[in-house]
Image (cartoon, rainbow, N blue to C red; front, top):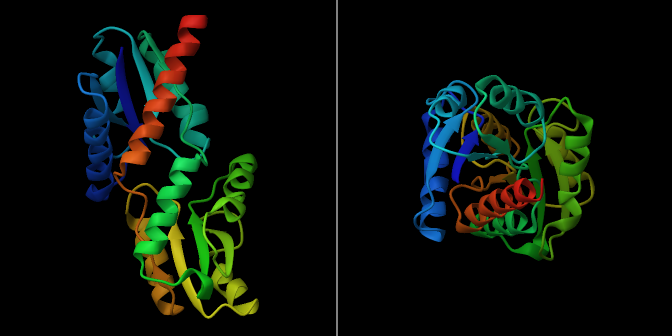
Length: 230
């Protein structure tokens, strides 16, 4: 069974580099596992092309945090069109391991928890359920932070500037903007510009962390177990 690690895709090359870094971390955790990297759009190879290479059964494992359009529509359609022997795994979601990586990124930004407010910034989705799940991160981030709020880089409110203003309004002086993104890209660059303008510190995205790779493997294994039961 091969793992097809499938990311969103971006015109920014840093996104594809991060996806391949995650794939390499998976290889370290599970030597011998056959892994292909694919993208839904903009980057190559496209998932359609990878599925066309029928080398036995596969699990298309989304490198996606939220169950938004790509996970709910694009990937299932590509699998169905390909007629490949493939199933789709669940998205990564608000897994505790990823929340721990987020905490590490905030700490790496060089701040003192008791004096710091954290603004978790996600991309935002037209799918309200995905936004609601993302909002739960404010309650699950470990650490004794002064306050933790959630904002969205696109789509629903509050936006990044509004989120920072909300933390200021509750008396927080030092603010870290923590991107709930796997890879850097044009959107995170815009978030960083806003953070700088608002005198806030910008943390790094989750990146190719071993805990992220472990979460991907968990989704892969769960999909295989479900396939066997079916």
